[in-house]
Length: 122
Image (cartoon, rainbow, N blue to C red; front, side):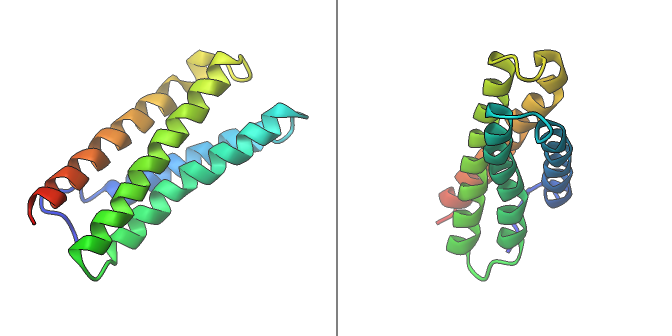
């Protein structure tokens, strides 16, 4: 089930975002300690965004669709948190994370809008 007005490219966009995070985490994985731990958290949440969007695309009911997109939105918020933390802790230079943080914000906005509109159509 696809929400009316949803961006048709959202599954691809969330996949591309996850891929960018995978590449970042590959770099972080070569650093010992905290970097690896944060990379693991970031990778889980960022890859979950797209996975839930994909599941939502194949949902069998409006409720299932809404639930999957709601989870994707929560995961986008968590991903945003981990990215901000990496910048604030100076593990990754903030300017290297600007585009990822911006994309996380955009995904949050898109997913929030889709969930709100879908819930409003009860």
